[in-house]
Length: 59
Image (cartoon, rainbow, N blue to C red; front, side):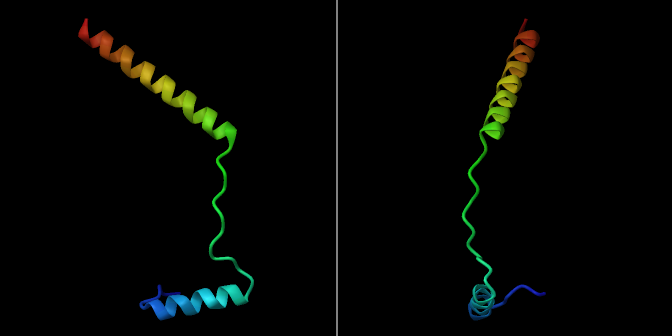
């Protein structure tokens, strides 16, 4: 399927999707607590690593 070239074509595709029962505007998923925790720990370890490398090279 080729991408729509005009706004009218895009609106027609969206109307067909709505008629077929497909929601083109799905709500965003909430980020999981486990994902936030993993990202936080990764960033902490990364910053400690950078700080230790900086201190090692400056001495």
